[in-house]
Image (cartoon, rainbow, N blue to C red; front, side):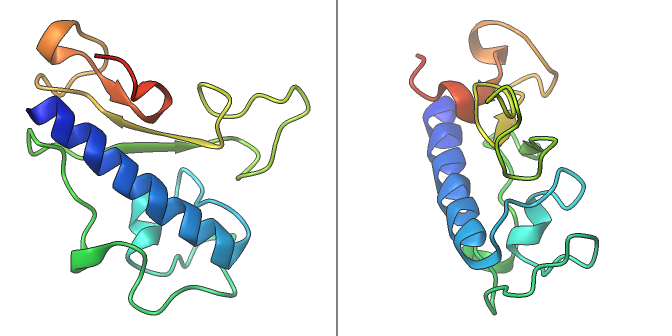
Length: 122
């Protein structure tokens, strides 16, 4: 049930990221992180347009079902395709990851990571 909840959270965060990109023209950088969805970034690139009230309900980035943070990594090209056509893992502009029950990268079974790049698994 927790893995299902983590996948639902990741999908919600992805929706917020898409709205952010529509408004600002790019996804947040890795440094800006998911906090950019609740507070206007003050580090470059500072978005000219940013939705008052942010992009996630509750004025906080959710924690995963094990009470750990979700990890966000943007592609090095800040939301645009790279020369090779690959961006963050899985050919995306970003990756959102829960490290699962153990809170550590990697793992198998209940401790396996849950990533936005492979939400269809298990």
